[in-house]
Image 1 (cartoon, rainbow, N blue to C red):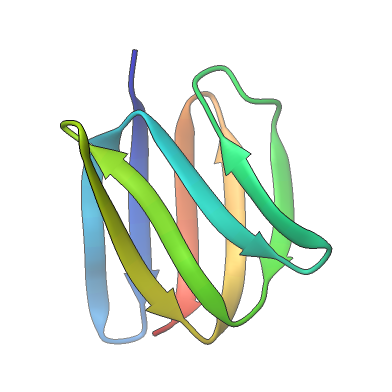
Image 2: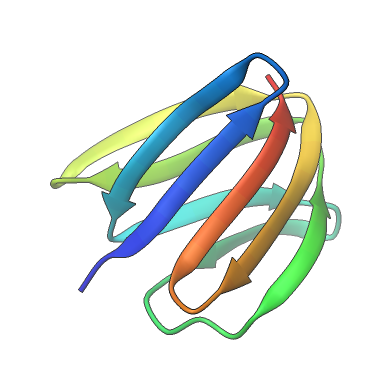
Length: 80
């Protein structure tokens, strides 16, 4: 019941975890990705990425970036 979350920056891998959800700061507002989410690619704006790993809520501040969601894998490229 998890999705794979990969958050990368020019400096390297920031997060690589199996999560139950991830909320991202999209250009048209924040949105949450759950298991079996529809495929999408979109830009991200400055804000926090919020995710839940092993029942623990975690946050990662970002400046901007892009996200791809496909087949229960969330790949995020950011300027952190």
